Image 1 (tube, rainbow, N blue to C red):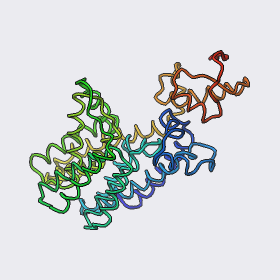
Image 2: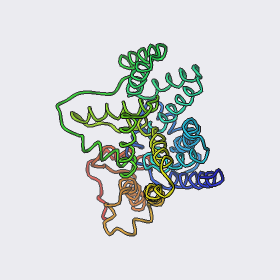
Image 3: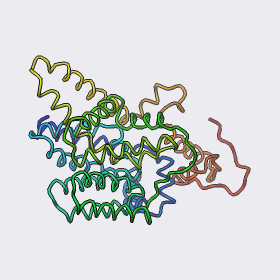
Image 4: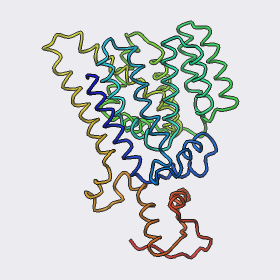
Length: 369
């Protein structure tokens, strides 16, 4: 991909991302974070409060960080590819992943974690120790499950015999475990393995995830293993082990796994480049199919609202939980009702955002749909 094509894509991507953030009503988890979170999410969701009178009032920092992450990913990709065109292509693929799009639009800690992980990796490649330390300390502060990242660093530094990094990562593991860790290992074995894989497929898209797992496995068998592989592979394996006994929270692991998409692109380029031109065709066709599926899924996400026209039963639409409380609040206002008791306490926060408070009286009018 040429530089000009990437810039055009990036501009269109920024517009589409902003449009989605503006038009999509507040979600359940977003509303809960907006009203109840006492950490960094509270600061981020209230940063632009009242500026736009739309979704950007609580999503602006996440959109900005999402766009910054594309540029940071490009800077990191330059360490792996000789040609800038290949780094541009890898960055485009990264931007189109469903998990990256949603993390840049919806209120969540993952987009912040991805930013810090990418900064750490760039700093490591450039041997900027102070920047590594700053990003690691910030990661320790903002992410309750950052112990996953530090365990991966400890494993990497142990294999590479980097005593300084091993000492620092071990210290950070101890601090995270004692004071910050929110990664729970508890309960009885439940077997959430298949559920975890379905979440990863939603995060990457099915075709990309399959090839991503192949790339990690291939590097494990016969390729050079760098810090990015150790972070991604270790996080991925820990999530699989935990899924055998409990439900895994995807935001705990996804930021550390998804940044290694560049390794998948590197594996693909190496596979294609070692073959003669006449034998490259099927690989390029496969790549085109994957990119086509990502573009298609991205368009569905960006322009999800018109898809309601295709559903007789609106509740089957994947963004219905975002729109239903908003429509409900508009209907309540039309009949002059200023309060309502939702069956789901979390939905009550969505209604609250649109000016509908919880009624004190148990008997309130029902809405006829």
